[in-house]
Length: 502
Image 1 (cartoon, rainbow, N blue to C red):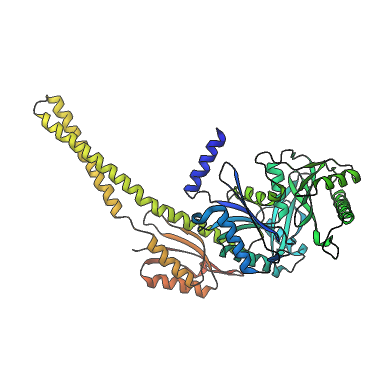
Image 2 (tube, rainbow, N blue to C red):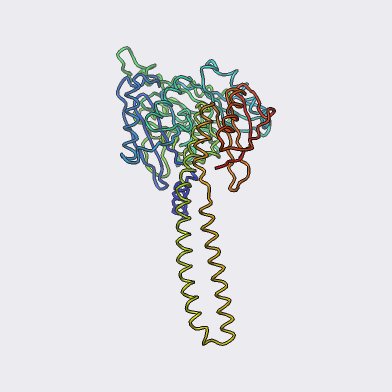
């Protein structure tokens, strides 16, 4: 019963544009995998990439990559629904994403943000100007009063190219995260034997390579990735002895790292493998005194090759305001997503309001006709009624007259409604002409002042933006003090008030 109520609530929120639809996607050199939930089950779609389209997580054949992403979308939604742009949480499985955990004293607000950014710049293995970085809090040590922060870094050019390709294919990346985070999320949220009080080593074998994750208290702390190309011989093959040696060597390195950083023992090894499952279990059992078991999901049976995309899809179910996970996208991509949601919400209600008002108006007309008939019937019987009945009939007539006046007021209110779309189109045109990026737009229901907050390239363009609004004749009483324009490294931020005159 609870699941049914949750399903219908999700459908209602999606229809009203209150909760946006966000799916999950894994992008690797070998394949594209896409998952989304309809509230009852997960829907899976996949497309294999031709050899050479992507290498090392970088696009080598751009047009073929875009065509493959479009094919994936068509497979997932069909020809009609594929025309709509779909928001996704994406993970790049074949890209080398560097991650590191560091700790800070427990501080709050802007000081915490500044301290984290300073540490990120210090530990970044890539030039800050050439990288995107992200972070999230993974733990808090109550004894030492220190926060544990997970940071990650990725090449900026790689992300920008893939983001642009997704947009051309009809997708919008809401967030980009390391595959290790997606895998650890599946393990924490959907794995049947997970215990938050234990520590695990999760081994993942897929087309990319051999991946080791350290999971403590349900959080991802460390990743060691060994790609297949580092194990292959000169013929491009992986001999059995080389595979066995790579597993043992990598496992030793992970255990040594774990022992140097954390006192509690590893409880067990959890294996997510698309192949060689029995071989890996045998190698680990014979060389290490740790129990090994397969990763199995509680609900829908899904193969290990879908775990990364599924982890992204699970994150997509979280409302954007509550999602505190890291993202390795440019800030502008997140702003574009928010702007698109505002536009979709406004477009939906712009279509819904006339329909609702039309239904109300028809209801009032029918009610009015019904009351007129009652009034006529009462008049025909008034001459034969007693004094008390006459008084009652007159009271009913008065109520009918009052109701008719109310209908007139509603009809007048409907005709007096001022369409906002023309104002918004003019305002957006002037805003785009001067390179203004909106931060907040408060539109009151009455004729009160509109509040707008944004950022321009320079203060001169902000002033020019204000002047053009005044000269349009649609916006009056624009209040933009010079002191309200603050020039910073990211542009000139400002706040202004004005009235709309249709």
